Image (cartoon, rainbow, N blue to C red; front, side, top):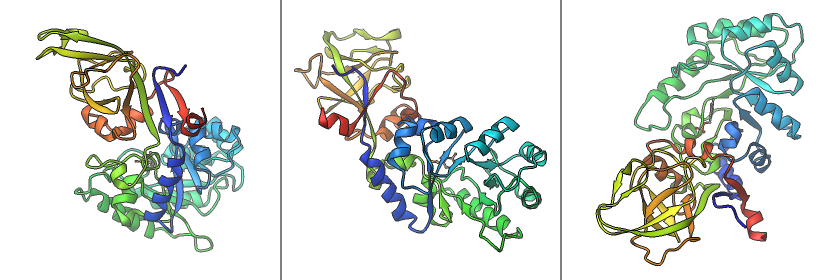
Length: 370
Ligand SMILES: *Cc1c(COP(=O)(O)O)cnc(C)c1O
């Protein structure tokens, strides 16, 4: 018995998407970003699928520990670094690399006698104003860290782009210039090269000058476009995730009947209504608007009425033969998650990250052999 709501993961697509990254950045090392449970696809599953990369990046220390405990030996960078001695102990114990971005971390280093234990990425804030030291303070911090016993030399240097997905906004170029100027003003390690990293997926795809020693692709590895104006498929990426459910009831409504909570949908005509077993309790977006496309028996039908916790309602008037049990796709192959994100006024990142525990994960290869 298959569960009503399930996500099929085409794991082979990860390798295809990684090859696309390599085509855009043939000389760069790849740090695959697998934070937030591998963007909802499963932390360990994605780490296994991408094991040929040069490094992984996660947001938090506990995500790095999970990877190490599962036997992953690849270098792992913790993008948010650490905030206390205990987290620093864990980074050292599990051999995780840290992003260093704020003064309190320097104070912690100053109290640590260990020698050459921690590999770091020193983060420059080039305008996002989230994590990182300001250009005016970067050189002094860099020099302080060069003298810090616990820090392994050379220090790697990074920044993050705030608006790389908007090709018409040259903020990215300004950020890249700020990074280059600031970093060139350091007395860089001559014995062994300091490595640089700037580009996320949008940087890799849209800003060639952001491609340096290391790239940090996230969303594109999952086959999803970082741009609102295109889909992953249009960028020759392959979506890993597709989300499915089934019709659980079909009924006839009359013109003027109201559908769902608050009766927000009033049937403009006699309508064949389909009820589908998926809702915000599964991660389907609560704010998907009327008209959001859904595939029933492979054909597009519009969402009508409010998304509830466990169910959504669709207009099946175009499918008079539809019945309970018919297959439904919410997003995936043939229905881009990017399009659903636009209909829900969100970004595809939130949709794939937001799949809940109730959704059963089925790996494609497992399906085929079943
Ligand atoms: C999440 C993240 C990335 C990956 O971003 P995508 O848009 O998913 O490619 C890269 N770098 C940093 C610092 C991040 O936080």
